Image (cartoon, rainbow, N blue to C red; front, top):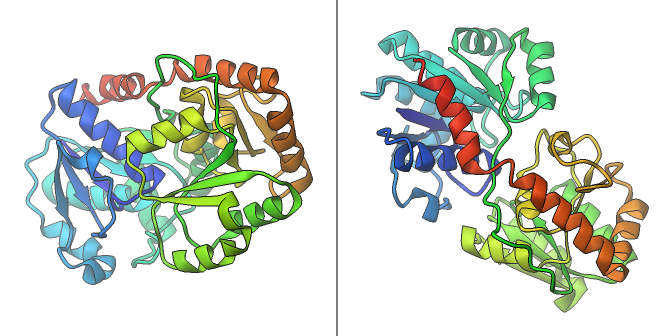
Length: 343
């Protein structure tokens, strides 16, 4: 079996694919090979320890331009391909057309027609053909599935990402709030800066470094020791941060949003942007707090609430933890494996 990922760097798409690969290999005893379309220096090292990874092109710069061509000449002995996101699905289709290998698509965001920072950008007709030829289409949320139906007139099945639930909830938490995301200039960091200017709280920012990350560091120097960065955290380090944080801030609306589910798995209360796919499984007001994207007043009020009302924070986190136990990675892969075993 081959799992095709846009890249194996610090991001949610790669994490989902690598957890799938590890569990399919260790628990379901499949021979699994991971193919990364783009080669980057930063990658989930610990999630790759037990896996074989091949790159569409060995030179990073050229891989961003030539992966769609070079992957067609790859020799695969796999009996099934799982292609992640639109680029992974299109490449899987190209390989299937040449070698006859069946494939399924797992789509995280239907609007990403190319890998950021790379070429090509696939056309709608190409994407529609690739999706229509897939044996099955999975999405990370109903939100993504509705996008696929609207944009490409194809149907699929929501298969929510998983998490690693803690055995128990840590009720004694530290005084910092947590934000987990790759570090690059974008809207979330501007929004977090506004929160820090309006409200007095400590913030830990954890994630992989992307282009422009030094600009983010420079812009946050004015907050002094109130802000701490943790670059390329291991899964163990991230787990500990979730266990310790007073709360997770997830201000940007996303098709799913893996970090609120990971926080829930550790009993860490979260505040998220209304409309995010993770709200399909975490109930607003009971297992998570959700507010309008970009509303600094509502997010600041939530921060104040979690700081002053520890009983409410514990209850919110405990409820989230109970729900997260229904969405472990083992359960996720079991549902996936049940479907692909028919091929």
